[in-house]
Image: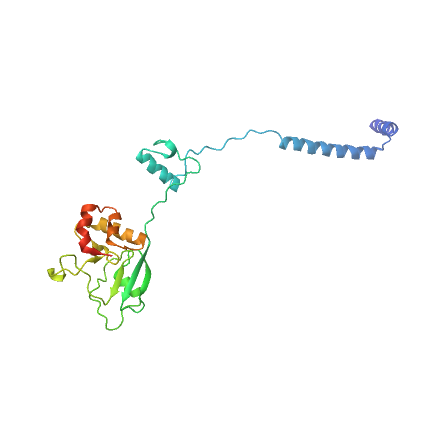
Length: 241
């Protein structure tokens, strides 16, 4: 009975549509595949709900922008009137953060094997500068040098020269003055022998010398931070460029 119905269906299909059974079956398979692709395309292209990214209210902790924001918050003011708790506006660039100096530039002169300007790591001592210059020439007396002294940026180390001045008004052993202190070659220790000059002010003088390429005149001492008119009048007869 089923076979009779199948033969009747094939006859009807051929008479009504002009198609053989195999051709119709192939068309059905193609149609099923097309429907499957259409369903898949619809399913993958359907609207979906997405979550918004988390809002970042400020720069990452530890970044330069975060450090600048913290400093402004501590001072009670922010950029563009943002207030102590305001965030940095887009495009804000913080001021350059002071980076500790890691390289010193010193001038080794006198009776050294290779005198000249040298670049040494911060914290180097006079002995390191002398070694970097190839050492002293044979027969050179280096007793005037304190080889253990820590170098400062921009200073000059004279190998085999006379001892550095002990300070204004006092020479070695408390004798006569050795002469005015040179602002362009004096070390921090030599500057501290001047009246009213301590480690902090000596460092300001050395920083000014490094930033401006030296002192062209004694009058430039007025531009150094921490030196007012009264202190300048005390220092003027005791120093030279």
